Length: 158
Ligand code: SF4
Ligand code: SF4
Image (cartoon, rainbow, N blue to C red; front, side, top):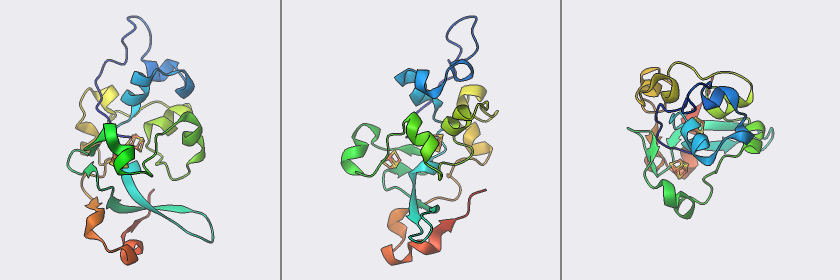
């Protein structure tokens, strides 16, 4: 779910930027891809509590995530290399409770605006890191943990 962003949201000259005037369902594929803030949070491994079905994020990142850039190193072939990588849809945005509160798709679907640090707003892909939203400063590669120790890497998101 990682992609690069450019600040051309207001491409229709006298209209509000697309994320302020379109629902998730109305966005073009390009707009949809641009909407991702590049935080990398959805690329963290998750653990599900079998008793409650609650899904918890870990600080362990997918093997394809470049932690420094918070971007996928093989976005085009990600589903071949990581079969459980999700291609987010509007329906999934409404159903996935573990999607972070800061996720741009969640915000737009809930009728909120993007924050100052979103690259579409700031025009700078670095602001998602500077604002402490991305996983850059706390993620660890999944290869750093043994399978039986994943519970030690749980993250309680706010
Ligand atoms: S959590 Fe949302 S905004 Fe962040 S990388 Fe994933 S899809 Fe993009
Ligand atoms: S393959 Fe991994 S790093 Fe790439 S988008 Fe999917 S979860 Fe993120």
